[in-house]
Length: 441
Image 1 (tube, rainbow, N blue to C red):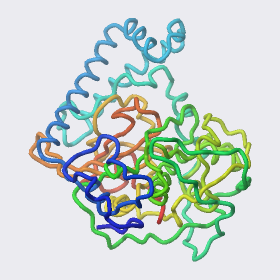
Image 2 (spheres, rainbow, N blue to C red):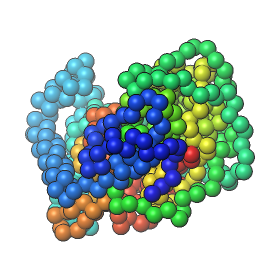
Image 3 (cartoon, one colour):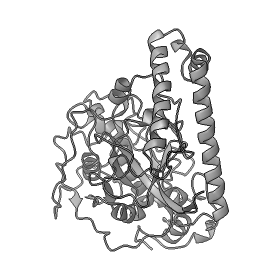
Image 4 (cartoon, rainbow, N blue to C red):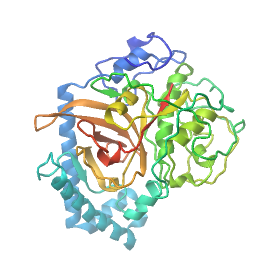
């Protein structure tokens, strides 16, 4: 299928092509190179019809439960608030402002559910049984607080693309990582080269022309089954979504590059905070993924243990070891679903969209191609898609697998499924409005 990276098929027997691995496929011994054939078998596995029907049924049940919980909260908001505080913070129980926001969000979620039934042509006025707005981890925040804490600032405008370059600055101080074992975190040190405060968007100019236009794609593809997608992170109250999404993509290239040294999805954690601290300006207001890719591809990426994430940008750029990510550049992907699939087929790919309404998104999948958007304010990582999902109307639909950075309690274990097929124009939430970004290997 795709040309991915390195190696032979020496460990293909370790993969069971007809099995879905919940987190990652079984690891090879440290010293084995990344196995393209086995990874392709795992990532391209098409779920059976029974598996997909079971998934649809489970999703509908989660949606039903979320809507039922919302209706109960609307009937008795005091009891619902006490339950919410017990889960998310007992200190808020007597906070009348938080309680006011909570009740306002209950009404907002109910209105969004009604709006979905009215505006989605697939539903013909019926209730959406695939998506539920309701009580979430953000229900104690006002819309303005949510926007300022978890989305990019309004000062961050639609991104500018830069022309491809034939050459870029060499890797400044990046080095190869030492060997580790799949069950241990990376070793780290507090000394080393690489202290440099970056200015501008893509000063290294590692961007290249999109090379995957002629690729074909399978019916389904999931990088998680190939064992190169790290766990869902949490950006907390800082608009660092681009750093999290882009570094999630680079962690994938890093694992494949250094697989023979023991790096796996379970023990690879590159630092988001290094980008915040070593890029001029307050990066908690947001940035675009090209600046993240450019910096880390050019200068290398440190481990989380060297520069832990603290949801704050203090412009405190430290001299710590930075390592070769495995990416040789990045590319702007054409603005359409077919090109996005070709890109994701080769590497997990970052998209920008409008997540302003996700603060009430409690359960389910996004079925509506026309989900509204007004401003691109959030970056997320597309790690694959599933095709041919049988729906109750007799049609089969396709959905993107989208990794978010709001922790594993968001929606579906930190992921959101977004309708893939038949979505033209700007796409759901404006996800085709601007060029996605992908690392190249």
